[in-house]
Image (cartoon, rainbow, N blue to C red; front, side):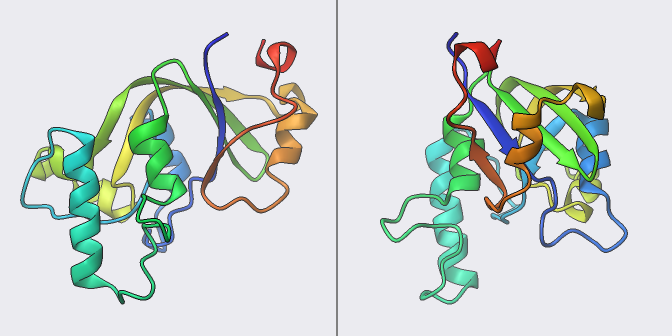
Length: 172
């Protein structure tokens, strides 16, 4: 079984107070994160997006606190997972309180500047600027495996790959 399973919190820090990123992502059939880049251009490949994040960060943020990049100058994990590591066929568990969804990645990465300008406002309100299209399936609480529920009880940032005990049995 050649796919990865991720866990993700859909609560971007720059979302408007009255926004609901979980419901927005459910409606749009996406999973995504914030992190601004230049809105006045389109992006053809992930290398262009990565360079734009680096340049935007350098222009707009304290060089001693580059939140989008690790010390080795790689994208931080939430952007790296969305833009580079997730693949079609991978799964993403998301939750909000006692509501869970299992999302299957159906397409490559997308960034907000590539959308038509008239469609961007709701994404900005919910601070979803780098995302993947998914098939979204709400899972009743009683049907969510205990292993999955426990994954959300600790701290892990925005997104992380689920590891042990993800094995052939738990993948199935």
